[in-house]
Length: 229
Image (tube, rainbow, N blue to C red; front, side, top):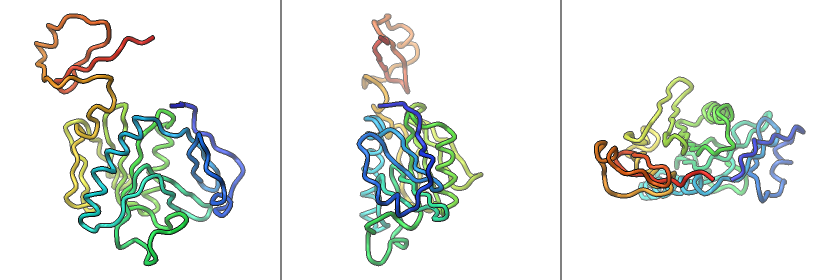
């Protein structure tokens, strides 16, 4: 995946001009305070994690009639100047769905849950800006999923922030009561070349012979990676 920095086009656009833009092959585009922002399309790991999240959330929401789970869909977070963000995954509660059904254009309401999966092209400030925009628009819960650290940061407000790691669980709270998904399951096999199923003790790991490659112990499992070129 390209790690080119996010590209911001300087000429301000109206919402109508943004809606008329054609899709681009190599970039995702968003509108931030009237300015067009491009970032490289996500790679395989990003898509895999997004799929895992949708696979857990969508049946949970559908079976309980809670609303809709959508992916990479535009949400109009503010209109003067216009800001349209497309979270990787989002949940819209049933009571916030328009009476005429799914709109043709962008959603005119903020999602109750917005999920962003961090890509190599994202900077910390860019992710923070997205989170603040979701919260300001009325989003009740934001999850920022970081494959590099196998962690998720949850935001309920600008001050209610929690960092989750391997032994923690994602919880839907008041937004999705009863929803739980362990991070160890979410990140399973997503960021390593090879993982063996056997659980090793620290003593067993220390006695292993050296190999042609990098060998680490992650939650009791051997993880092998080839040597860099």
